[in-house]
Image 1 (cartoon, rainbow, N blue to C red):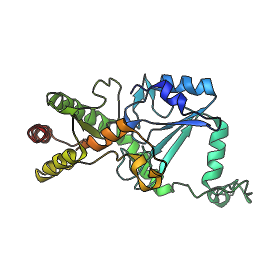
Image 2: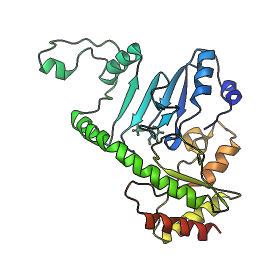
Image 3: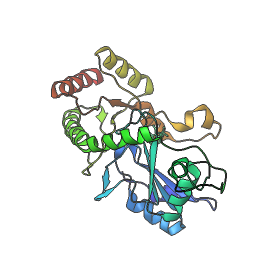
Length: 269
Ligand SMILES: Cc1ncc(COP(=O)(O)O)c(C=O)c1O
């Protein structure tokens, strides 16, 4: 997705240390622009690739372009261990510090001590319990093996959706011109010339036809925790008020896709 470099640079202050990029729905952000802004201002880049395991940007996997990449294994993600996640980095210092902080700032883990590789530990700084446990990690390894075939099916499903939905006036399919291999974590659409109430009625009618939809996401600046900052973001508000996501999973059948598209068409009309 293209970004406006001027808009990003406007938000950089002397206190800014890093740019955090969210690869929304698994589609790559404009990493060339982001990396060059980061270089110019000496900032780290953290890629939130939670929606995009194995998604690519110009042949590189998301999460491997910036200084660090983050992945979520929450229950609704492409890989799930119920809860948990992963941080990746090629930066030795960052990796070392992350390993330290994930386990209460301790220099050795219980496992190393139990195996006799270490007998003592020091606490270097106050850390956290951010460890993924061994049971979840083993589930993740098995899930990882199933990921590529799952994503390949999702790519076929998305193509059918894009073909069908692009014929419907009143609907925009975000990232429709994407040519990269992506995870298709979700299937978002945005209603044109709409208002929130209209979107909610469309969702309700789809629900009555047995089609589950969701919203990804409500605008952050409208949540109670952030609303006192008084942010004015009209484009974000339009998109978040008029977006909804259609069913997207690898076993979605052709007849189901056709049924969903036909319902969207008749309801939006
Ligand atoms: C883009 C994105 N980043 C981060 C997270 C947080 O992941 P977790 O709940 O595993 O910490 C989510 C979770 O839904 C997400 O969608």
